[in-house]
Amino acid sequence: MTGERILVVEDNEKNMKLFRDVLSATGYRTLEATTGGEAVEMATEHAPDLVLMDIQMPDIDGVEALRRLRADARTSSLRVLAVTAQAMQGDREHFLAAGFDGYLSKPVNVQELLGTVRRYCDGEAG
Image 1 (cartoon, rainbow, N blue to C red):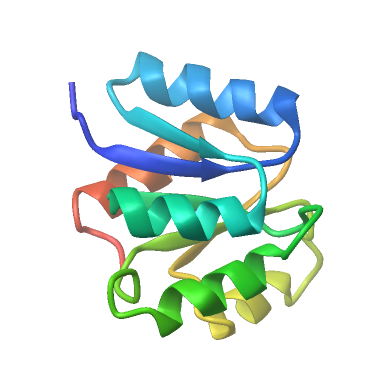
Image 2: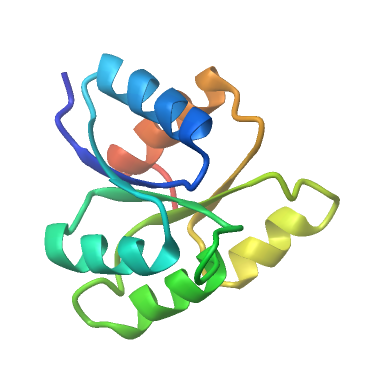
């Protein structure tokens, strides 16, 4: 069991359940936010080990939430991965250039999710 805390930011309940079930089953503790604003508040309050940030959300999008996290000294060094259905050529590079530490495309492949989370939580990525 790993025990790392992962903040999952996702407004789709089906996707949230997938993240929760997969991560919990492998020993990660999940925190959950359904909006970008809530994500910023939770990240500031709980200092998770990793943030999985959906890009398209009903209030502020993932890019704006990331900008706010990076602007705050308490959260500026958090590892934040973009999780998005935007998977066209160049999208990955766009999100990395925006300041995300990594990128996962939807629909999420469970093995890719776990491999990526392990790399970031073990400090091997980035």
